[in-house]
Image 1 (cartoon, rainbow, N blue to C red):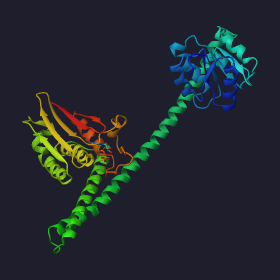
Image 2 (cartoon, rainbow, N blue to C red; image 1 turned 90 degrees about the horizontal axis):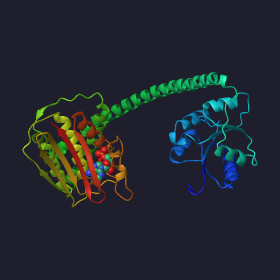
Image 3 (tube, rainbow, N blue to C red; image 1 turned 120 degrees about the vertical axis):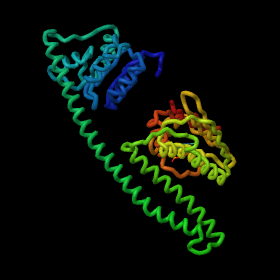
Image 4 (cartoon, rainbow, N blue to C red; image 1 turned 30 degrees about the vertical axis):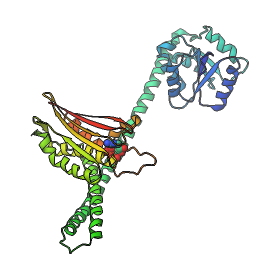
Length: 392
Ligand code: ADP
């Protein structure tokens, strides 16, 4: 916005009128800022201090009357004149506009010679009033009734839309759940046969075949984990935890040991720093799933040669689990969104890692169900730290 010139806010959806008013008043040394509808007009009005506001009463959505009433509630605009520009010249229309909060009423078509003069009169303090004050109360009541009717209509529409969304959500959940069950069943027999091959129970294998089997197993495990995530996510809402007092480090030992092995296989160094921890109240399966999600990401996103550290820290009032890596890091703009279901950061020119964007959504859900806090700190090209704090 050109701050040197007095600003005019013009709320109007018609492009020709926008241009015309901008030209006429621009020539008079004003800076005309245009908004296409009520909500964007209100957003602009909150940020600027115009000398006058012109409102087309016929804008769609939040109409000109409602926009004016809302503008009137903005304290910094208390003394700013609001003038209606409208095609409606019917009897009573002017009074209705004044009752809604307008200070003046101009009927279109816009008169290029008159407009600058009228605008400067309003800026100088001119205000129109309802001619018969006795009628004002009736007009106000009629206006309020119309507003409430519109509100009622909106509430009904929103309730219907909400019910429809609820039904779509239920269908989506049912679909995902059926899909993941259906896919998991064949996965089980696939994994079973892989096992038989690996153990040599279906005859001897050449070295090449054994190497192929390793790749098949890794891919099958990834797929199974994704399916488990999907199922877990679908069942989140109805899931009941079975918390008990447990030693968190002993519970998680098999998990971090298997990740140490996986990290080694991928050329990543993984340290675990344990401590003497007092028991915490937790659901063992969920605690494991949450830790798996954090370690899975650390191993998945940290490139060969990188480092991961899983750290446990015990204090009288809390137990802390921290997963650090010196991988690619996560941009600031993604930091809170990565906890949303299905959110993934896909960077150009990088290989896409497997995943559905559910791991962290599940991890955060589990942390919250334990009254714990899962937070992230990260710096691009430096690394990422996820911290879970369990209060005692
Ligand atoms: P997924 O890994 O399946 O995509 P998540 O919910 O586990 O889903 O993670 C969401 C996104 O957060 C990932 O797509 C990834 O971009 C980013 N992310 C998570 N952990 C890390 C990490 N340790 N280092 C870098 N990026 C990460």
